[in-house]
Amino acid sequence: MNITYDGDRLIFHEISHFSLSQCLCCGQAFRWKPQGNGFYSVVMGYAVYAEQNGQDLTLIGVPESASADFIRYFDLERDYGAIQASYINDPFLTEGICYANGLRVLRQPYFETLISFIISANNNVGRISRIIDTICVNYGEPLDGGFDFPSPETLAALSSDELKTCGAGYRADYIIQTAKKICDGFDLNAVAKMPYEKAREELTGLPGVGLKVADCVALYGMGFLQAFPLDVWMRRVICGVYHYGGKNNNALLDFVQTTFGEHAGIAQQYLFHYARHHKEAVCAR
Image (cartoon, rainbow, N blue to C red):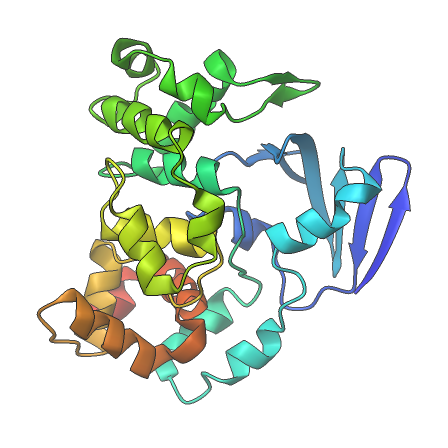
């Protein structure tokens, strides 16, 4: 992968196994919006327009000094071709890989990911996006071209009623309480350096964070590729396609590790995206 910088354009060249649209439209990020031939969002304090042309990814609005941050954000240095090849003997997962060959797991800011997935509980992608956008417009730092995600201090100072006017509903109290925990010293950076099982345990100690939300934060924010978020469709895949019959969380973790190995979270993303768009393929098994 070569990188060039031209004016306000940061261009990553020759990226294989990468699709911008697949990465941004698969339920792991909520602030990217289609615009022109690409997508627009506020990411890590930058108002960014992203566009893909062949194997080139262009980011407009990003300084050259932030190139390493966006390589990490899009997980561009990982060899997804090798990961996909490692699953060649898994027919169903191979179908998922063929369907979304350019899907990658993003590495998003920890706090934004945490709050976003608290909001995601019992919700749909469109509504999640609207709630997050409203919170950012009302309480985020204004930027040239958008609004940054609010800080823990800002969210901790809000009332439940203020967040409920943004559409957060019963999740408003969870958001405020979790933000207060962060302000009081709960260190997400420290959690990201823990072993996965310990990090997961720490995250589930936060208000509004169950196992699924903890796994989403661990995978889509902290880069724990062992994390395997389970929703209704993923449970159907695991039980119906892979015949999982365990009764507790430890059994599930063992099953996932044995079946999908060290890149289980990436496998999960292929399976989740494929299952959502091919319900008949899941139900037929």
